[in-house]
Length: 92
Image 1: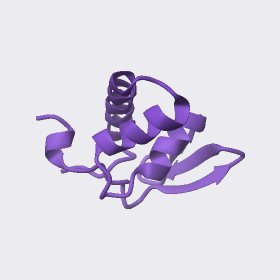
Image 2: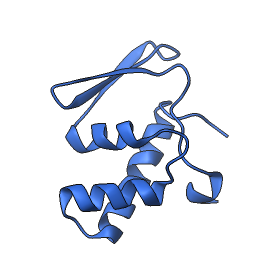
Image 3: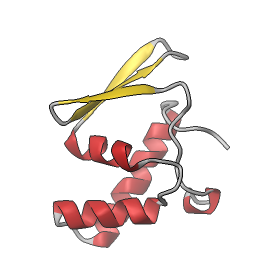
């Protein structure tokens, strides 16, 4: 099942975040650790609201960073999978 079939991505309810100078700082209390995202990752994180699909997120990234939609979609899918693997997204 693809992430798109699971519905729009949602941030893990225990993940707290702040953006500082264009980089998202995410605290994951359940793992007693934190993550820092680069500018593009921070933008994707900002777009994750539980309503916006990965395809819609990819469209925004493609438009804002002037990359092909297919490239943005592949990158967003991989990035969302990484976020989920690292406990930053809510599970099913």
